[in-house]
Image (cartoon, rainbow, N blue to C red; front, side, top):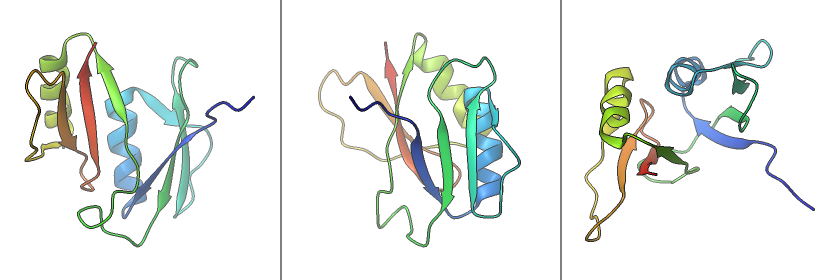
Length: 115
């Protein structure tokens, strides 16, 4: 049986991505990151591992990954993420969408879903 061991997140600026995702998710590096790779884990010890890797593709031309982040208070989480450096993405939402599409500081899109 397979399980997800890590979500691999392609970025152009590894240190900036480490700062953003550690603050956004309350994660920390599992060990000292290199210039092109980092493994982030929850400070609490529970949850999915996130691996950050450097890529040459540009996020606006090539979707390199995707996350759905579940929130009990979606509006508050969206505002918190915007304060950390995320930005809103112009998106065509279906009626009654339960998600908001944001981009991290590197331009990678992700969704904040109302749980």
